[in-house]
Each structure stands twice: as C-alpha cells, then as structure tokens.
Image (tube, rainbow, N blue to C red):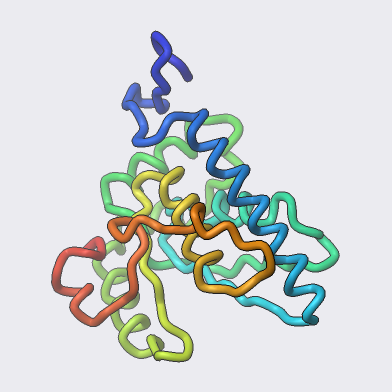
Length: 196
C-alpha cells in the first residue's frame, strides 16, 4: 500500500526500507545467489541451510526469495514441523492475526497457531536449550532479528553470500547489518538479543 508516496504496511506503519530500495537490493542479491549456485554446480559441491524459528517469523518468505531464481534441478527445499524463535511476541501475534483475515494468507493457518502464543515461554526455553546444545564451531548458529521481514530477508541473504566463496562475488553487496544478523553466543540468552 502507498500513502502520499510513502510505503505503508497493512497497519499504516512506514517500513524501515522502501519497496523500491528493497526490490533493488533483493534483485542484486538474487544475481549473487545465481553466481553462487553456478559456482557450486561447477565444483560439484553442495550447501545446506537451516532456517529455524517461530511460526510467522518469515522463514517461508525468506526461502522463497533465496530460491526464486535458482535452478530447480539443483535446489531442494524441505519444510519441517514445529518451530522456535526469530521474532518478538507482539509481532508474532500481529502476523497470526493477519493470517486469519488476509484471504491470500489463510492457507497458512494451522492448528499450531492457536498454541503458539500460549506456549511462548516453553518454546523459548526449548529454543535456548537447542541453541546451547547444538552450537559448535563447525556448525554455528546465526541469529536474526526478524521483526522487519524485508530487512531480515536481505540480511540473511547477505550473510549467506558473505560466508561462501564463489567466482565473481560483488563484496560491496554482501555486508549484513550486525544489528539484524549476528553470531549466537551463550550471552545472547541473557542480554536481550533473543525474544524471551
């Protein structure tokens, strides 16, 4: 929606990035993703990316933008069941409410949605335990603040591209915002970097 030339979300709030800037940045990053895939196909190598987070945290939209222009013959997406944390409680409530009122999003409504808010603390504790037990130097967790879906998507892609070597990389495009994407550390559980 647009109001007097300013982008607005469904609640009338101005997003942190304009639609034009978001689309331009996304297009440049998707070109980089195609370069990355081409390089990995040539080297006969593979990449595994795991996105874990609460319902409506934006995982599906992020995955869609990552694979949108990649070769479907060389790309596999597997959606698993229940999730844990990437967004705040108020934002999750708003997005769950949007699912029930937007006719284009109603297919995403699930029985888990009703339980998501009721079990917020239990999910947070399970998430904390999962992060603490499974974070290793070889397979580290990276955390994402996802209250702004557009900025989260762009920064996840930048982080992904920045971690991997591929021919023709445009290094100017792949610097993620450290306030949005940051390495997991045990202190993240206590210092407010994760939704409680």
